[in-house]
Length: 242
Image 1 (cartoon, helix red, strand yellow):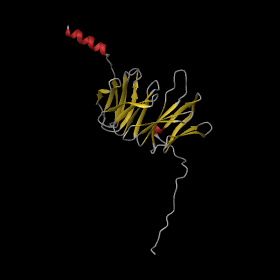
Image 2 (cartoon, helix red, strand yellow):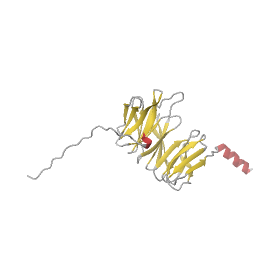
Image 3 (tube, helix red, strand yellow):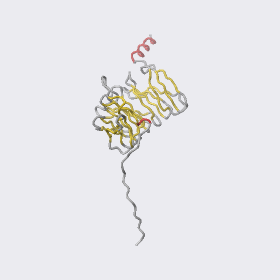
């Protein structure tokens, strides 16, 4: 009889002391209590902590085989302070929207790479997600389906934001470009190519008339966004024709 080797069986234990960083830590408002609840990632789960009592009040588990990469609370409805839902992006490409009161999940699956950024529209009806495969997807939370897939970036999408005043989307990427997307026609109508290195973040200011972007080239660039309506363009063309 040959020599046998016995191996001990190891099973996973409880997860404790794990806190996400960067875009995985966000303050949320529940029961109209501002600054009291904090959402943090813990491997494949999201924990809601009561900061005043120093106690965990809710565990969000979407039954997804991947770690949490980014979390984004839904903006409060007019006349309310509460963030009723929390969008969570996972490393295996899923987006899950959780009800912050009951913990019930709504799952969306559509990315081939890990989700790297999330953003809600101003009305809280749509979620835009960007991923490491360079694609953007806009999800309809009400009907629980994907609305449009946007392709054009060649690298990891680092940030995505809805415009407040128009049905448009802005995204930045490690390919050094910032793209503006028209969600009515589902195409990119402008690419900003001023940076020489990866663009990591940007903000929209002054009622969507200014865009400030930062990248690895150690520069901040300020862009002026001037939009012309279709009827204005047609009237100008008609005047030039006369």
